[in-house]
Structures are given as structure tokens and as C-alpha cells.
Amino acid sequence: MEKELPPQSRIDYEGAATLDGFLRYLAEEYGPALTRTLFDRDQLKPHCAILLNGRSVRALPEGINSPIKDGDHIVFSIMIDGG
Image (tube, rainbow, N blue to C red; front, side, top):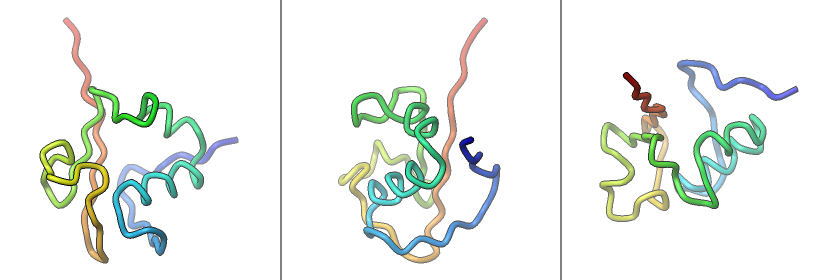
């Protein structure tokens, strides 16, 4: 059974110091459902928003390979639309 990522949590992480490394850690820790939710063939799905310290990862020069450090805030959000 896969673990669920808590709505708000602090996660201690000591792996590769990039957002990509952190996301890979989460995929290993919380299972493939998280990877399927966020990625399609190693590309961030269009409906997924990831903010690093309040800035969209898509707008950062290094994107998903942006460096992370202790104390950074990472926010995951799934955009929903409909009518």
C-alpha cells in the first residue's frame, strides 16, 4: 500500500540538492502514484504546479533542476478546471 503525502508537512531530505533529486526521493518514498500524478515521461504534467519559495518552477532558469537548500518551501498543486 502506498503512503499518502500529508497536506502540509516538513520533510527532512539529505539527497541530491536539486528539486529533481527531491522529487525522485518523494517518488521512492511515497510510491509510483505520486510520479504518475506529477510527470508524463519525465516532463512535469501541464496541470501540475510546483512552487519553490513562491516561484513557479516553470519560470525558474534551471526549472526542475533548480538547486534547493535547507529551509526552502516547496508547494505542490494540481490545477483543476471544468464547467
